[in-house]
Amino acid sequence: MPPKRKKETPETTRKKAKKPDKALTAQTMNLSRYIGAHVSASGGVQNSVLGSIRIGANAFALFLKSQRKWVSPALKDTDIAQFKILAKEHGFTMILPHGSYLVNLANPQEEMREKSYACFIDDLRRCEALGIKYYNFHPGSNVNREEGVKFLAGNLNRAHRETSSVVLVVENMAGQGNILGGKFEELRDIIANVDDKSRVGVCLDTCHMFAFGYDIVSQYDKVMSDFDEIVGRRYLAAFHLNDSKAACGDKRDLHANIGVGYIGLEPFRKLMNDERSIGIPMILETPQEDEQVWADEIKLLESLIGKQADDPTKAKELSKSGLKDRQAQKVKADKKKIRSG
Image (cartoon, rainbow, N blue to C red; front, side):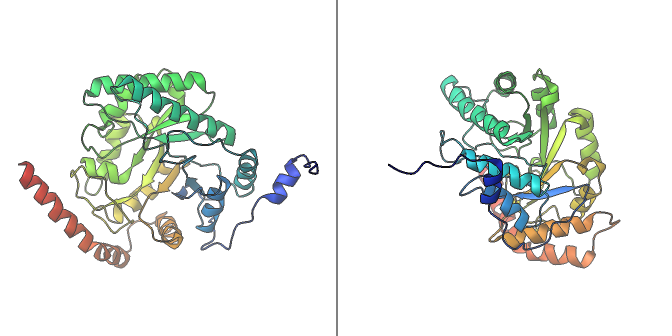
């Protein structure tokens, strides 16, 4: 007969919690901006906290389960407990899980809409088990945009009734095909159809904004004022921080590293000094071959806080490093315009 297992207690869970590896860069304490990246949760959700510590972040995003499956195993109780312990010990309060790319709550087909909803509500229950306040998701697509908005908002209302606390944060999109949420007016309409407006918000992705046609390079102040007027500043819950390999208005979702794409460094300096960015999660989704890329980008963004202008040498250096990529994408975009035109 196997020996009886000792009952798990908060103290034994704490002792089992993995210690973070040596950080690539130190976490900057007491910042009014919460900057991090979408880190891996491979091997258990608690590993997302460890990965965030390694890159010197004070916020982070993660997937709560596999993005390749509609149904995934439940989170382990020990992983949940370790996640909570590590997040509390290291001061992580700004955590923004990202929803599954499989989910389309605006789908015109009821069967697929229900399948999407089951995956979606499972994620929200995982958020509540982990003590996470925000949940970021893509709005989905529908050839009939008005119908799509109605279906999406209906599912958000349903999710609110079936959960108690999670704030549903819809992301603006780059405008490809029939995907909803590129225009500020569509974000406004989605929110207008949600009953509990205290539990809905918007995540503004800088790459998506720019790719859709909101020129934050030459008209940053106007774009942000338009968002305030059309959607409402009180609904701004998060930012995704990405440069763009595609030009403004190309409607292609091609993320680039900060300062390397068509957006460049200056709009990010403006954002880091914009009061709208205070006290909400700001998450990097930039390309990276190793974690050092994100560690460096976090420090770069932090260095912009309080600056009246960019470092022109650094801005030129970053822009030059992305020139070939930008040129290659321009050639592709021009060919596409010729074929469609």
